[in-house]
Length: 253
Image (cartoon, rainbow, N blue to C red; front, side, top):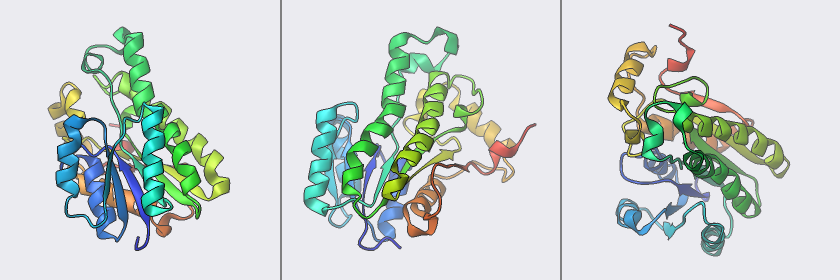
């Protein structure tokens, strides 16, 4: 499905991350991939995971640093000549902002969450677009806390709402270049980043009880949806937020 296609994935942290499940789906479909790691602390994890992937590029990139973003896409251009898709799976807020009340969010925590979790999509899209010479697809990862109040999700809900709005505005801007931009609203998963949210265990239990499928979503199901959005099968879809949450979002009570 993705033979002779190239893409870059931001956000692989370990084997449980949504970004890694997405990478596996894309690689198995034939894509050549580039990966970034945010700091030296995560370098070994990413290199170990990608060791057996043919022709993979692994490079450091803090998405909040313009110089590193520019260098990353320069390296991608040198190795692959072009880019067909980008997967954005980056989110962060200080731990203290993910407990208690949103009312108590500090300015610094707010700005950090919005920059890392939302503005980075626009920054990376701007850098990727010149390499998408034959059109392309950009996929980002959101969560239901962008639409409804989720206890303890707090400022990250605001950041995800901004991310979903950014998805629509970027889709409008990039459509003329045949670049599509979509978001996946995944159900809660026991990932490294999700563990920063207080009472994750209660969230997972409640979700499984209320979702029509009576279970939690699996990371690979999210990855398979990303594969669809990166592939020609979704050529007419842009600016959308697709829920992959076992149907939880359709329930009122």
